[in-house]
Image (tube, rainbow, N blue to C red; front, side, top):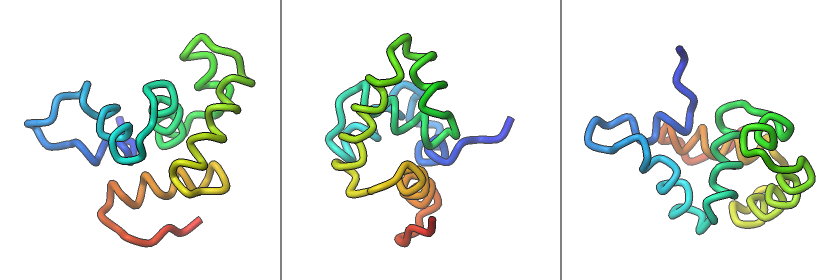
Amino acid sequence: MQTAPIDRICECSFVPEMWRAVLVRSLFDLTAPKARIARGLAMGNSVDDIAASGNVARNTVRAQLQQVLEKTGCTRQAEVTALLANMALGQDTVKV
């Protein structure tokens, strides 16, 4: 199984799996649901996939996604994905 970019941030053996969401939350001051959306996007999931996995309405995810965009300074979903991927790779530029 291929590792998603956001998962590469915490591949160190001393960082438990459960702390991956905490890392995303703390970096961008996100709530737990918004961090779940950011991770979902970074893992290649669609808004519909994220809504289904969280058992919430698509419109709820879209509203929270707008707040994720604001908190990360991004304007498009692809930028959030690229931002998290670049963080995982240690790069300081975002290419979309």
